[in-house]
Image (cartoon, one colour):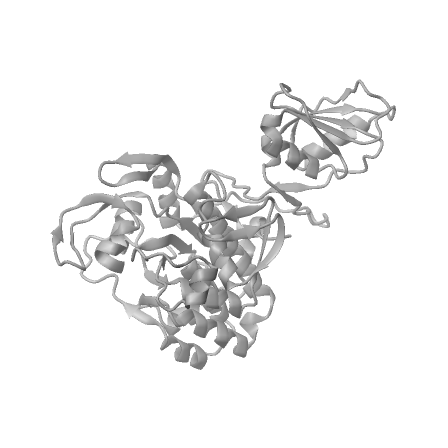
Length: 461
């Protein structure tokens, strides 16, 4: 996530900044040789593949920052975040695939970089490949698991991430519900927030704000990356040489990359991607078969879905989009509203509509409005028992309270009333106060075969 943040700004900025400036900045990049002595590698496909690694290094973080953002733990010297990014051959699309750090992996035979001891192939969690064999073993393991040839390797730590976010003026994040994690110190109420570097680091590191744990964290990281792209492409950072230099210098102060990723590569990518926007990016995670796969001596790991993940990585090799194609709007059609963020996707909520007034057709209007914004209505509104209702009423079973709140968000001013034993279907009785249905959308509205979202679908409206 941290290296993706830096890469987004650097690559986008290189298109508008001169060769001399980028060459000067390149000198700040630390160099590694992750492809040393590698044999039997996958065949190259179309486009460019980058392995983006965020480590838990915190040597340059101040004592005050460690205390404020709860970064005082001992680093594991492993990969905290791993993303495989595919840039299409025409440079019009970036496909970002998150690889869970706890993924079950079989690392190839190698020599331990710390002890010098030779190891046969053995099972580990994916993030341990870095601890045992550094960037080289990490690349070898990822290529072995995905069948995708890695063209470039980039690595960043905590400090660079925070400095980069601060240099662009912070990043705007929207959340449908409060987020609190005592482990990282994250404490965000529902709503829209502009996060500085420290709070952004808390946001992308938190694993204890929902039942999704690491998988939920990856979705937040992807959402943040899309928001960063929006920030970098809309506020003039990339067209202002002074601001770009500040951002780039912050990133490069702790970036490590392969020798092949230099000035010419950054300039070529930047120029090709000068019209990049959040809609140009798509995000997904490796399909998971078993999120808690026990392995003796290792503990609980994340086991990939073999068939689905194979299809996903084949699509990357063949340079195919991961997100389903969106229908083009008709000429002159009004722009569709993104909608208010809600916790549960409208498509997952079943609704029966009733007319609680003498007004003919009101139930039909409410049903149509809810269906238009995605709710799974019965498409058969009925007359309610009450015929003089002033305020629209939403009744629900307490077991589905999150769904009820998402439904109520689409009906401003409505009353929520819990009814034990009602079941999974929400009931809406339209009152005389009804005017229209407010569009809503889920915080993570993944679609298609690979459960993908595009950047414009997850940034703040």
